[in-house]
Each structure stands twice: as structure tokens, then as C-alpha cells.
Image 1 (cartoon, rainbow, N blue to C red):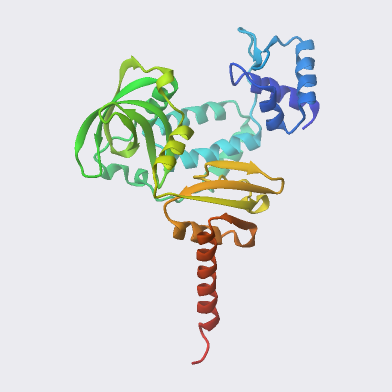
Image 2 (image 1 turned 45 degrees about the horizontal axis):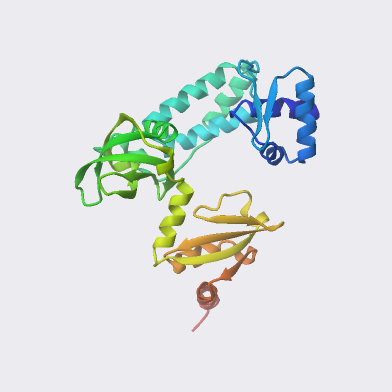
Length: 321
């Protein structure tokens, strides 16, 4: 990326948040803090009204906006691909919002770029087992994710009718803190005033949802990551697992379920809390020699046993008795 493109990208980035840290810019564009300071100074000298707060970061002065920016072909392609995933993994409310956003993106593309997306559209497919593939077969609405996201961002108390796994219907007032996608379903983590504790609600088992108009205090909430840490610490059946992966083997893929990640240069050390070492052992086998188990020793033994059993099975298969 040349300097002009980088300065434009930094300016766009500054408009995505109220305050942006210099470290965040450096991390995104892979440059030193000194270069960040120099580039921001160049933008200011060019007339861009950028302010700063010590210990917080940079911000664009109110009233300044960069004119609409054209998308590159690769950016438009990525949005088309994301749309395929949204259609399989999101509910009706998110699908409608994303479709609207995608139409706006297509509207600013040139005719050749529009033809390019049209040709690409029919050649991308996502095959994913999900309840959203059988929307017409469920009695539950599938249009709450957008309202849930709004509730999380604005700290709105939500009123829901929830059907648990025993098919019992209950009325809850909840304080949402986050959502995550796991096991082919979206899960909502929230403080449940009925149970007086944090609870994990499957979004596809919410029968109705509405905003109460009440806001809950920020001091009473914890982050999604803090919730997981608390859950792991209080569950005595979970086992701490520490492994290191070769970065080349991960290929940029996220490590779902990882509590922490430490960059070791060419490797990444990750910590997990697991209730099944058998599952973890089978999953780690896919990384072959590109993963190293630091603890527990029991996990090393399980991987070795599975590997030995596979070797014996395949070395004997097909040989004469």
C-alpha cells in the first residue's frame, strides 16, 4: 500500500469510531507507532481536523466527513461472500439488513463491476446445517437478532418469552451482554432477573421479544469474555488445556473457544477449558506435528493412544491373514 492509499485508509478508519488509539492503527496497517504519528500529522497539515486526547487516542472533529468512497472489486467480492454466510447463519432481521446494505454497495459500483458480481454470485455456495435452512418448519420467529444487538449496544432491558429444553415457557426480563455462534445456533448471554444470575439463552428458542424501555446500569454488567472466564472458573468439571500452534497451520483461522492467545513469533500459545479431553484430542490430530500440547499430560497420552490405534488399524487393513 502506497502512502496516499494508506493516509486515505487511516482517515476512513478514524471515522469508524469516536476515538481510535494509535496502537490500533499501527496493528491494522502493520506499521510502527512513529509512522502512525507521522501520517496523522500529515493528515492534519492537509487540513483534516483531527484532535487527540492523551492516553485515549485520535478523533475526527464533529462535522467533518470524508466524501463517499468507492469500493474496490475485492471489497465488493468479500461482501458478496459474506452475504452467503449471513443467509445461512443469521435470522430474518439480519438477512434483511444485510441485503439492504449489499444493494447500496452494488449501487455505487461501475457497470463492469456489477457484471463481475452478477457472474460471481451463482458460483458461490455455502452448505451448512442450520435451523435457518428449515425456517418454515419451526414455530419460533427468526427475527430477533437485530433487536438483541441493539439491546446489547444500548443496554436495554429486554422482555422475552423463552422455551427451555424441557419445552417449558417462561417470561423473563433480561440484561443482554453478548451473543455468540456455537453448535449451529446463536446464543444470547444475559443477566436473568427471574433466576438472579447470568444465563445462556438459545436465540432460536425465544418465542417473543420486546424492549421494555428500561436501561440497566453499566456497572452491573460484565463483558462476554468475563462471563466465559467466570463460567469456566466455577465449573469444576472443566480441564485447563494449553497448546501451541504453528501460525502457518492456522492460516488465519480463529481458535474458537480459546480463552487467551499469546503470540510467540512463529507460534501461538492458546488456553482452553474443556469438559472432554477425547474431543480435544481428536480435534488436535488435524494439526499433525504443527501443534504441541503443553498441558495436561493426560491429553498427550490420549493423542498418542489415538494415533497408535489408527496406525495399527491402517497398517493391518487389507493384508492377508
